[in-house]
Image 1 (cartoon, rainbow, N blue to C red):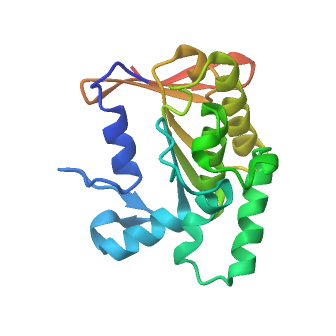
Image 2: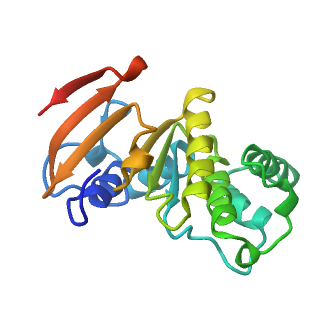
Length: 200
């Protein structure tokens, strides 16, 4: 969490290998980012990470199924299997009834569910979500947060989410507050809302 310009999106881009830090050392699976080639980083992003953005980033003239299948393009999987995997991801966000619709025919909440399905299609360990409820009304935003909560608790996905909304942050188990590119506060919120401050 943090105000605009505090460094939230920059931190997410660094953690997701979309940008490189100007100093410091970032490790993934005990290996420094500097020891990975650009091709290695691209493969990690595709197989180990999923990304959900505020503006959805869907192909407007492609169907829901085609959008969700996109990350599978670089996988050595036969075409019928790609369709099967994509359909399962779409089912996981309760959007099967829209599977043949073009993405520009969907509501904002439906577009975000497509974006989540696309992030899930390669079964990543980590999902990065940048203001995933920012363009949605509160009711739809609650649906999106419930999907992310289920992915975390039932499917054991790590969710790293950026928000400036206290309502959205209230779903988190850990809240890191940023200001001017630095961590201002790091709080673990455990069961029974017990708060343990890592850093103040």
